[in-house]
Length: 205
Image 1 (cartoon, rainbow, N blue to C red):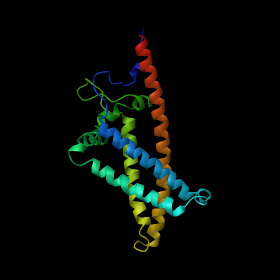
Image 2: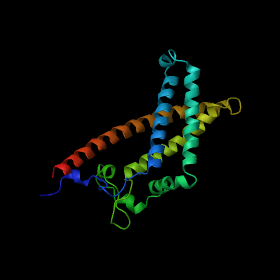
Image 3: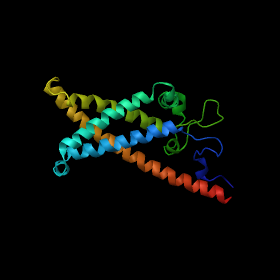
Image 4: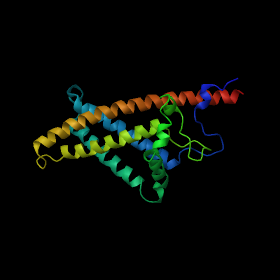
């Protein structure tokens, strides 16, 4: 009997250790919470009907402080001995060989579901191509958000034309990040349910 398509889902076998260290999980969920806070407060500030019923200065303060805190935490998490696993993850996410990327030009769903093969061919790598692309996009957009946000917080020091462009760019970045994050959450929930089904089928055998 040919193998079920569900078996292609990459699941770390029991006893092999966790895929992510505790520090990696902590940073992931902190950045996730910060991102959702930024999106929620940004939406409130952008929609007058929402901000009219809430203390706008407080929401603005939360938005700014969350962005600054998330940036500092992310930078600090990459330095020192505690950041070794995150540095390895970042290297694997961003330094993907071109020939490996070319191997995923078949079915789009494959490189969203399966981890790419390692160079040795004996084990899957930690991240698939879809995760690499998502990280690259979010990273670039986050840098733009920080730079344009800084420009918006320094009125009078930057020409009005540049400040107007910064505001427009900041809003566009906000919507793109919102779309990516919503898609990421939906994909994560779908993968979680699929993995649960696969594990349940394995226990029944």
